[in-house]
Image 1: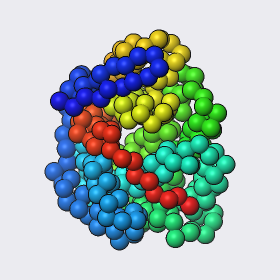
Image 2: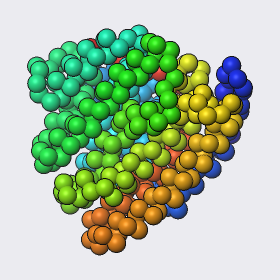
Image 3: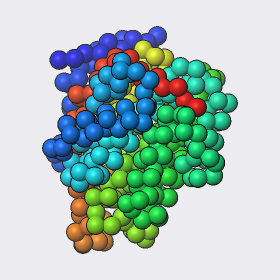
Length: 334
């Protein structure tokens, strides 16, 4: 049993990873059988594109179990889609740590400049700086989506990725001001900072064709994606709490709840679990409405994929070194 001792100025609490598995779902998780092959291919991809500076950084990246996350989130994916998700996850971890750790984390001016650079490169507005390892990684992922899938899907994925970049700027401004966000603000922005919508998009690649606009933008399907996003982000906040308290990070639902609604971490954790249970129940109700409106196999397959992603995320978090005090992966951005 692995335990985190989480200290704060108000209280200390010990949370067991065994207890963390208490998040329950009315559906099961499974893992893609090709995860080890995907990991080896992603590590080769990282070396080929020189995304990390040395062997030590490569070992730390491997310890995050990035390919296992992709395999738990998309257990029924084709080999090609799993590899795309594995490579994207590795690059996203590097990008996330570059924004969240070190000087960039409290430097919104630099973050804004980098956002303009990276988004300009991804959307093709500016010439790509191929000396930047993060540019090389993300452009490679973009090109593989562009070559294999409809352009409307690529634009959908890029638009959600744009929100992730903008959420990083919001976080940097908060850190500079030493500000804990308000609850409603945090709940909204957490959906973007976690990049989960980009994975909800990748689920469409499990279908014969990505969802048409009239389906994907329907309020019921949007609610499915919002609930999935909330569940993944809130549970990740639970699993990462020890690491984030150690680093002084305030962008965590438990910290926000403690600051605004309750007085101790234990009470905030209980509140998060209650919110999580309500969200799972809400999903069940929305699912019934979706299946009553659309009876086709593609929608049912998409819902199955959403459920596998929700349940699989917890299974990955329980085994992930990323939330076990592992030293952060710092890649020079820009």
